[in-house]
Image 1 (tube, rainbow, N blue to C red):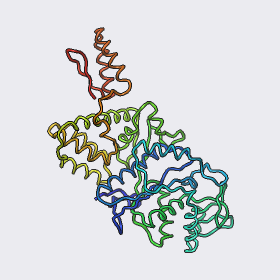
Image 2: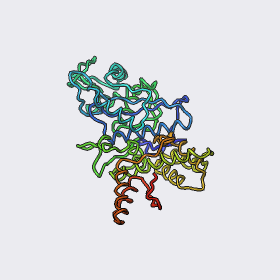
Image 3: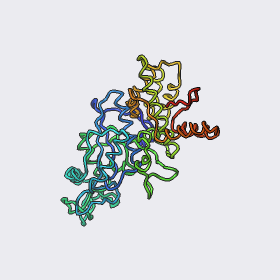
Image 4: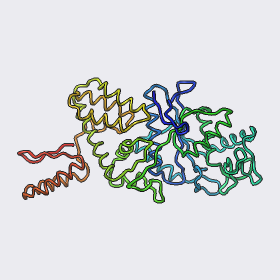
Length: 405
């Protein structure tokens, strides 16, 4: 059974579908008034991984990921005249999610298109005595002026209490209830304070509390600076020179999701080398007769995944299998593809393809040939090391150098 660390309970809890065979999962999406940074994408990758692992255990997963184009979870939205922001940032986010193989949820509602649902929830809280309108047209949860459900503000949308905008939590409270039938089995994303806000508002409106785990990821740095800092780090920043976006996915999976992760240019290049090598090996293993998956390794990987999504341990087991010559190539092929449904690395993409050199490797090979012709063996060795950094192995033969990935 999949178990994850619930930040509310402070302990690992099982992920279960309550009342049916459908696991209902709510994911806080990034604000729609700015580009999603790598920290946002790490959080959404975590939600993608927990979904993929949960699905392997049987229940059908129905997920809802909000588009915060009105409230912005407490950040100043860029809307004007009561209109949501243009789709520029949302389109960029969707492209990033696609590049990282983050699956699109069944429901992706925009707050701006569901303000009636938000207003209905606030109205119900007022009727239940859990919210109170203020003279200025704002509405506060439990009459707490620090907890707005509706704020008299500009830009503004119409409401029974006057023009204004939703508070920072009520959008997720309302959308999760509407699109998941009033029951959520797992929450993912959002900060701790946002989590407690959604939990309290949803529980008050439904007349019952929720014990659903809330899954959070740790902070992300890039070259030592926060990915969500004043100069945020975007996916396009690290893939501008041709890095495969799935190398970013692999690098992020290399650190436990609850830990602080510090990506660097070198860690991304190392992930890219591993990704190219695994794809090439899967293509090579595909040429061998099929064999059953390695049951021992498969069980160990599944235990790691079920244990609070311990992706680093799962990856170490697969690295060990990769180098185990005692396991038939066909078995390694089946095992790697079996778990690529969780990894999401497109490991079968090179099957049937002629091996191609990574960018820049051809020039290095030609330079190495020239160095050998000139007897510059030190330069030849340096170039061999440079090629190894790109994932290209070079061997010297009586007829010249040969290469493999």
